[in-house]
Amino acid sequence: MRMDYETLHVERIDEHVLLVMFDRPEVRNARNTQMGLDQMEVMRSLYVDTEGVRCVILTGRGDKAFSAGGDLKERKAMTETDWQRQHAIFEQGVMALRDCPVPVIAAVNGAAYAGGCETALNCDFIYASNTAKFALTEVTIGIMPGAMGTQHLPLAVGERRAKEIILTGEPFTARDAYEWGLVNKVCEPDDLMEETLKTARKIASNAPLSIMRAKRSISIANQVDRNTGYQFELEAYNRLVGTEDRTEGVLAFNEKRKPEFKGK
Image 1: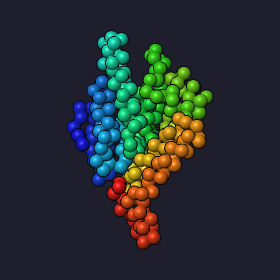
Image 2: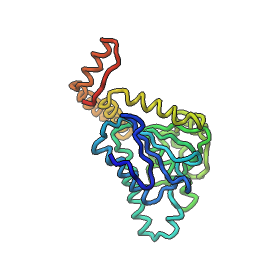
Image 3: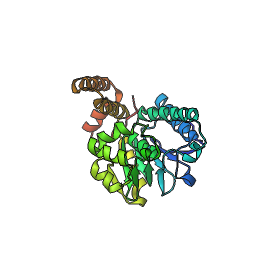
């Protein structure tokens, strides 16, 4: 797995947990074209081969920003064609993140605005520092959310709240985000990574094939009717019955020991 990226810090925290950090703190981790390419490559590489990674933590460098969204200084000189080409890269990055086979936890350490907020929403769930702020500000500069913000936000906070957030462009706090259902846990700034890592390691200790299939089944549930979703769930479930991990899990329970899952 490649670790050297121009705009990302990528680090194997331990055997099964990968840290991916937006690494442009001088511009509040704003997303330029290169960051879009880098994020897309990391997530696509995991789709092809997880190399033992069972959970990803996505965060930003520093204590000011998770990501301030698109780099408007870079975009200032763009033609319409340039803009569309860049956004096509961002679109592919969205799909790569959504298609990542292992869970991705957003650790929102500061401002998550516009595309930064959408990136957090594209993760499986969110932990946030109590100093973090969120906003979808696109309508204030003549565009609109274009990285699944209008798709994911209503599922998290409800349609009416989502309309208020998107149509006003107003920022809101981590505590608001928690109360509205967008954020799973609010932490002290110094505790954010520790709490996120604790959860990531808990996930990574479970059967990896089970985690991947359960994640996909949950995602499918919000896209199809209940009966179709259940058929997908059963298909995923039945694929797990013949795995070595299922045998090991039941054996470990009966032997009163911790299971040693191998992803087989």
